[in-house]
Image: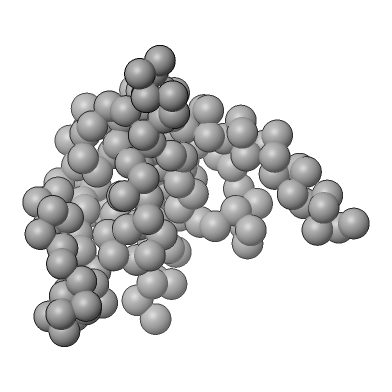
Length: 149
């Protein structure tokens, strides 16, 4: 029953989180800048609301714990291939391929040419208009430290 209750609670909260994150980012992938809303032609949205800190562990559905990402970027972020960092001195976000992803590419396991193209500083125009909803630097730090263990 407890597992069912967690799923049921996440259902409404998860749907709200997803809607709020996609709206805050105007249905635009933070990493690529592609705007991919649901349209009559597509039938579904091309972007997801990705959690920075996993919901299953942190139960945190704040917009500042979310990123609006294309489906490919969502997978790459969750898999630890793409990392989002925050640089405190410049107050800027950056996208980079992880060391593990680069090692996998060197071993011939991955081809990352398209993802290499999106590395660099994130334009503030891709962030939510309200800076309170920007990705939390502390959440990113915890996430990236967990990836680099």
